[in-house]
Length: 143
Image (tube, rainbow, N blue to C red; front, top):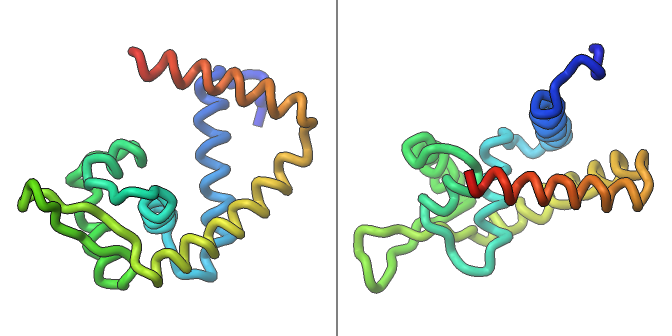
């Protein structure tokens, strides 16, 4: 692939896409799809339970797309839907002990992968990339 011919946004997209695919390949042994491990990880790493809308926003998907996935995660005992006191229609998502354990396994695999990849660039380069990505994210979120 001729990386010099890629636009900045295409390069950014491909990097994120291939990063997720690489982590996904490492997680195949856990029997998790990319969507599943990303959802369980997002739910488990938050101190407070998430609503379906909050999870959809974090994952960048529509709420309707998320429902079948959440149903499967509930069936597998990885998450639970909890009712709220103030709105009986609203359900909050919480990781079960099994989901928490899976999150920690996923995190170890993802952390090892990240460390392996990031050792190919210096600390200074990492800080520069992080600063640029943070600024871009802030600008895109304003749009």
